[in-house]
Amino acid sequence: MKTACVILAAGLGKRMNSAVPKVLHNVAGIPMIQSVVNTALRLRPDKVIVVAGQHIDLIRKSLAAKGVVFALQKEAKGTGHALLCARPALGNLKGLVVVMNGDTPLLDPDTIKRFINLHKKNKNDISVISFIAKNPGSYGRVVRDKSGKGLSIIEDKDADQVQKKIHEVNSGVYVINSDAMSILKDIRENSLKGEYYLTDIVALAYQKGLKTSAYCIGSEEEFMGVNTREELYKASYLMKKNIIDKWTGKGVNFLDAGSVFIHPDAHIGRGTTVYPNVYIEGHTEIGRDSTIYPNVRILNSRIGNKVTIKDSTVIEDSDIKDRASVGPFAHIRPGSEIGSEARIGNFVELKKAIVGSGTKASHLSYLGDTKIGRGANIGAGTITCNYDGKKKHVTIIEDGVFVGSDSQLVAPVRVGKGAYIGAGSTVTKDIPPGALAISRVEQRNILKWARRKSAVSSQKSEARKGKGKKKV
Image 1 (tube, rainbow, N blue to C red):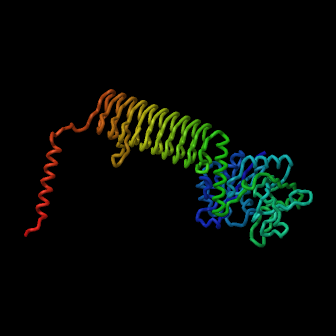
Image 2: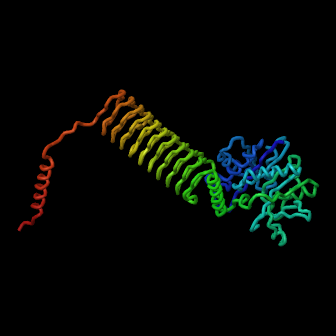
Image 3: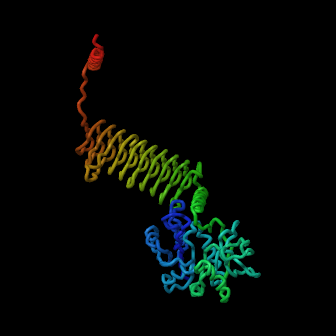
């Protein structure tokens, strides 16, 4: 049986008080619509359809998922009309249509899978997930008959005083057999709102003798809709907590979980320790038994096993191999690779640099557009001068090279295997393997210079005093 997921995302979200469409506001680092799409994709459907309104182009550009089909709801006429707009995109699908809302970023795929299985097991035509709300508020109430079967869903604005006291409410998640989708055309416009409510299909199905059920599963937090800034912050907090709990359960150590941010797409290996105020963002992968010290930010990078990332280090779009050490106060810019057991120390900046295994750059260096072999030593204050004002050029430093402190390598230049560069040198030409390069001015010692300087200074001081005396 084929399955399509339809995500309703045409709401303007006026209560967010923002020019950004509601579903594009970030929850734990990603747009909430992306979270819902990710949930849908984990169901492995044959189609994912997003129904959007006037912001459809912006939503399409913002979604990082291939194969998502978009359907336009030209006018905001409610959720029933929105699902009707998705019908052309469904084509001749024979199977199940799973409906979700784009502003519910905390949906658990396992809950949806369980729900679909219940729908199939009971051979329903239409099913809906309900849950028990502590404060039903603006949720639609699930009204059942004496047998306990789903009878109707009454929106809060239309509920009477008895119905408002019902705590079983609508989640907004449905499964509809494709053969039952024709019931959408029977939904009537709500006189108070001028909209077509999708919730009305439950009562319509009951009246037409279709088999319907409301399954009270999942938690209230899971089905939380985001309509205000306050709800946005709450959803971010809950997702952050869920992510931390997941990795804690898989053997990751957090010294202060409340101060750590872990992106939903990040992965952390067992035995890794994460100190306070760490930000692990994007598609970052961290291996086993690594240590991430305080105030570190890692974005879209791969960190190997038993790696140490020391305090206040930034790593972006780079690859750090096993047992390497980086920081403190290092900046690893995009396109860099640090080999196994390499050491990148304090105030070292790499940009599109390849550093070989066992190589050390321990202090105060800039290495840009550089390829460094294995077992090299880069002295403090070394700079690869990669930019000539128009183009970037590459510096190649081969295995076992020793670069003395305060050296400048003006690219393009190659330093041969096992070569040495004397401290304070400016290298503008290739250095053969095993050679010593020195390019500093020859030292001169001027004897008794300090004494003469002191005498001259004293004479000038006395002269100034003389000029300052008044004539009598």
